[in-house]
Length: 58
Image (tube, rainbow, N blue to C red; front, side, top):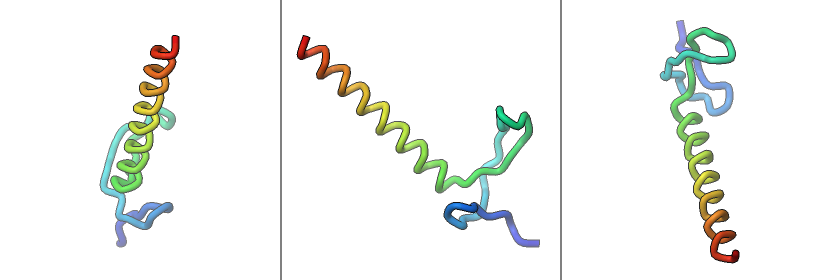
């Protein structure tokens, strides 16, 4: 039996966590998860910088 793979990048699904939406344990792709977390971190960093610019302008 083959291991489950990510539909986005094809990597083997290695992460296992509780899904709040499904209320069940699901596998996730560590590669795609890392990319999503990095994107969220960069967006948060951008928002903080924007607030600081607005504070300086006021």
